[in-house]
Image (cartoon, rainbow, N blue to C red; front, side, top):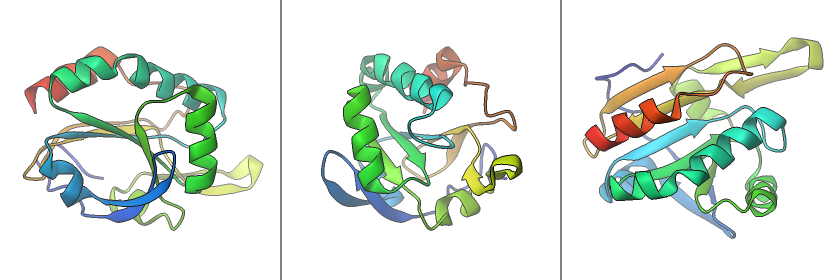
Length: 157
């Protein structure tokens, strides 16, 4: 699993931003540190609450010069519908091929539901180097990150 001090794995993936574009980590961090907030799936209660919580605090991230991205295995089209439904002001990264989930070593299964290789709920703050300056991962999909702790980490990135 990726830890604080590691070089963040590079990726290029579809970006759900109301349209569908493409983003790479190296492009994203060129504008300053980023938060990568991994979530198991759009349109689920805990994931919706988590993304709304990040959205509610976007001003604090912006004041720190940090850009927030949500990351899931959902298609960018589903993510755009999710963004629209929740009125999210930040973009979502689509990892349908699970390349990012695998690179960050945060895959999990909901075996009872027959759903495999989803993203664990995880948050990484990545600086411009791109070094991971904060890492939080949980095996419990019902647990959300400590948003104050993420903001503190982002402010220090």
